[in-house]
Amino acid sequence: MPCKLINADMVKELLTMKDTVAACEDAFDGWGRGEVICPIKITLELGEDAEWPPYKNGLNAMPAYIHSKKSAGIKCVGGSLNNPSWGLPYIIALILLFDPETGIFRCIVDGEQITNYRTGAQAAVAAKYLSGKKKIKMGIYGAGAQGRTQLMAFAEVFDIEKVFIYDINPEAVTKYIDEMSKVVNTEICAAASAEDVPKEADIVVSVTHGRNKFIKNSWIKPGQIVFPMGSFTECEDELLLSADRVFVDSVGQTMHRGALKSVVDQGKFKQEMITGTIGEVVSGKIDGRIRDNEKIVCIPIGTGAMDVAVATAIFEKATKLDMFDQYVFNKDVEVEPKR
Image (tube, rainbow, N blue to C red):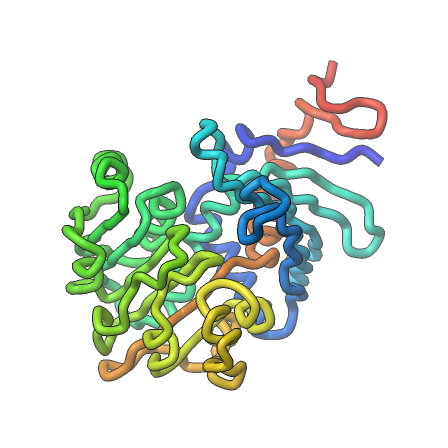
């Protein structure tokens, strides 16, 4: 059977942050109501966190089923630490969508922009239900691609008064401010140090490759929400252990990778210390709204459910617009214009 192709240019043309936020919100809501199946991601270690193989890379397989869309799929995504120095994107991904009833593959979708957009959207959706505010000040660690999409996504959900951005590379911060000031209508300031980022912020988001637990508990005040987004250890142990409430996207996944992995491995953090999932908050099963006297840590590492939901939205839009007349992809023809 022919399998359609949505390449990177088509994704760029079709995908908006507004659509991404909507798809992620719907997926979290369905997940909270038990209508999403999302196993934890499986990682093929290729040297990102091990001495061998020597590629400084890791490949994740991330499957999911979204009942509201009658869509299933799997994302295969690599994140090579070498790529930026070679002029390649850090994230390289493909998402395969298939019919859940027949198993027939529907579409292959380039996943780089989807990954970056949904990473921003999943945090913004969670913050919408945890914050309870319409207007916020925001702190961001990391002036890369995902630092940009975090701001884009939060700007879809909130009226952002001010943004404080920090990166270990000052030139990246300068470039970020110049570019993002043209994308979102808010004041963006360079934080003088990592410690300065949370000083005035309501919400703090970290999208770095940091493994050194650089975000200190003493920097975070009651009434603030912290989002450590990566598969690394950006927060010091005390911040994770002293948080009044901890929310995650996937309980099983978060216990084995990302912000909580270190404290779990040390035996300091148990599964029962997780307050609930973002899906439970979005679907109304749990009231996650922050109180003035508490700190909240929310850890959406990233799941196949968000990727499949967004890829499905793009597939539906491309189908409606008859964009697949350009390409055909099957066992006889690799990828070529249709005559």
